[in-house]
Length: 407
Image (cartoon, rainbow, N blue to C red; front, top):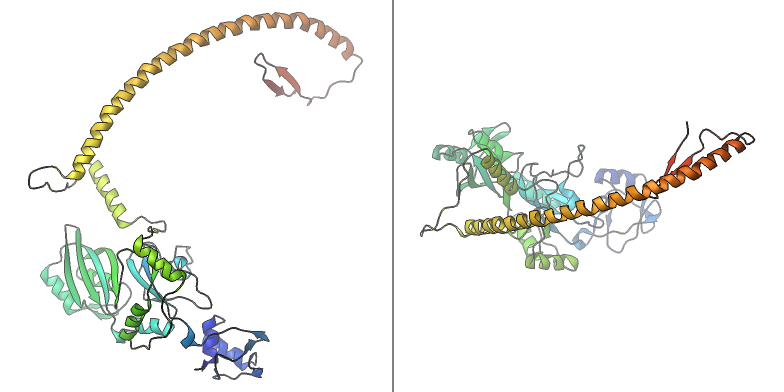
């Protein structure tokens, strides 16, 4: 088993394949002590050096093929770097040694749902290529009425700016008013293709969620902003769809296996990345409509005419709050008044005591202060004048020191 030298160096992350060919042609790469040539093949036991430094490598057949499912939240962009410093989907992926994650397809910033990542570039290219016709399934919430004629138009095909497009399947998932959901399937991954097909018929998509890509389905237990790794059987099923030979030893092991087991038992909390989920925004809109005086739809009553259990609990809790809240308020007013009277009573006594003793101390100061003032005036004639910025301390009756400056 062997592989081309420039391909091995590019996969390690030292540069692109074309750049590695230039490095090899410059004589900077050696294999087993001999200067390497462009196109030379390398085997697992060979010694590889670049500029005299030994480099560790693996042949492609020895590398474990890995595939991740990432639940993209709204507000993240499908790019490694963003000039506007917006959050990206790559920020939440696990680190990978001597390799990199390749994204399979894209979702726009306002779309959510399933994103695939793999360390196998060939697998990613085959999954994205239009000739393989890999199905992408979406759950779509549409504002506006989808008539049978509009539905048939989108099934037959519409002409977009970049060519014709159509839905392979179109299923009504239910809902009322502006909260009407549909399930559609396309076999291409063009930019905003699903949204543009609906817009061609005068319909606006308010939410778009990808639920399936080929044979991979978005797990129900997976939260937004989190990822889960596929096991060997799921990866093999995915590679068979694109006629790619499965690799040996691609099963989960170690921390990845334990992480998947924990997720099955207890799903991890969702990561929102600075943006609220659509459900929270819908609730805020309903509260705002209710505040503006618009009538908010209530849950339907049961057959017996009883109020739903949730509303009964809310009413019961509200009555409890009013009942006990009133008693607590009366208690506060009752005891608060007594405490206020006590404070006024004792504060008056303390005020009289202060006035009484402060007067006595004032007389003492006046008596002795006069003598000290006379002495200071006598000695001040023969002493040096004091500096203007020299501070002095004034003592108050409460014992607190306060410092001033002379000007």
